[in-house]
Image 1 (cartoon, rainbow, N blue to C red):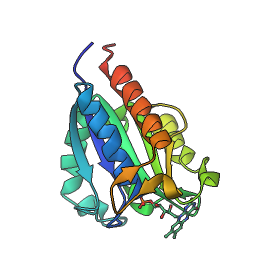
Image 2 (image 1 turned 135 degrees about the horizontal axis):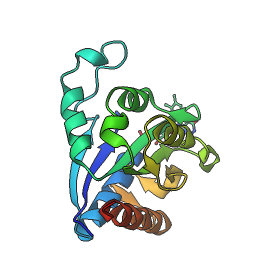
Image 3 (image 1 turned 135 degrees about the vertical axis):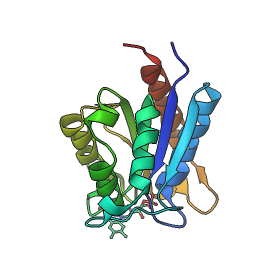
Image 4 (image 1 turned 120 degrees about the horizontal axis):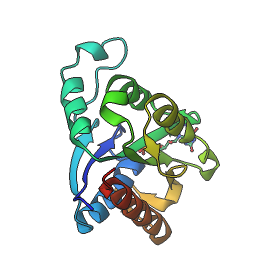
Length: 177
Ligand SMILES: Cc1cc2nc3c(=O)[nH]c(=O)nc-3n(C[C@H](O)[C@H](O)[C@H](O)COP(=O)(O)O)c2cc1C
């Protein structure tokens, strides 16, 4: 088993974000387990989206970061039963077979209602079918009152699901093939 290097990506542009809070719980647990964790936070530095993403110098930096990683945490908002535009742009411009094939990814989605449980799957489908990544489960929802965006806290049940996801991501990305 290697010490895995995980990149934690948060695509929410909101000042207070459920998915970003949830991602920080996963990142803390990964560090406790001994992983090296680097971050990409699009709130701090939004991507120039389509059709200008090709001109954004950050794209190459992000690709290098993903290339160097063993696994990926991708946290993103749900809008209209799907992933946000910045998430789509990130998938389209940063992640590809060269940087991501056979790498493990855990998805965390910020949403208001648990009836959005199928919404993260379109990201999972793109990662698996187009990019060749290995996605852990259907994704974890950071939903409604389960997250206090202002305080940066989550309820116990969600905390356990996020910590379990972190354990799986740590274990699967530690395996040398
Ligand atoms: C335009 C828009 C569409 C939304 N659509 C959904 C939706 O389909 N399902 C849902 O559960 N929440 C929906 N929401 C609520 C967001 O998912 C929620 O605010 C979530 O916390 C966003 O993630 P973030 O906090 O990480 O930015 C929507 C919010 C906006 C502004």
